[in-house]
Length: 130
Image (cartoon, rainbow, N blue to C red; front, side, top):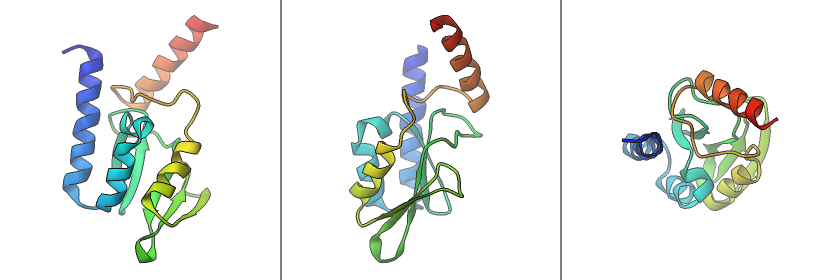
């Protein structure tokens, strides 16, 4: 299996894992997966929140906003840091749009590896393009 196929398999396995664990509302997962820019990132969950990582292995990246469930079937978008607030969203689609608007430049597809390996790869790539 080549590196691209391995990355795609890892990302798809991540999506299947978040579907299977049941901690995130199904409508939110469906809306996120339907968005091509998010579908190519690695999803993970914590405390009922849906997060997206630019790499496939732990410790995942924390440079993309995340979505929290809120009362009445609504959502709250925060991040990328826990101290940063984006705002409320009435629907899953609205929450997804808020995340997509705030994706880092050049975000995706997910990198096969850890955040440290991603940083090293980006540094090498930047040196070769400067």
